[in-house]
Image 1: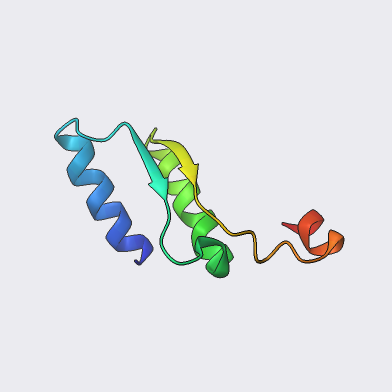
Image 2 (image 1 turned 60 degrees about the horizontal axis):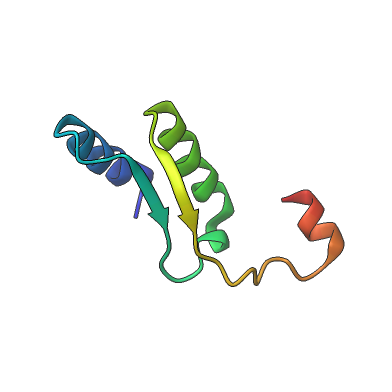
Length: 69
């Protein structure tokens, strides 16, 4: 999903008062770290709570990598 697509979906659902929170999943969301951060920023900007995010933490393979993220 692109950021533009997410914004359209969030906006449409927000308009109808159907959106309170989101759940981030599908594949491994942390594999596209910059896009994930953009999604989180967009959700915060639109006052959408992030319920939780599913991850297998495959990126968390060294202490240094974990600290950087």
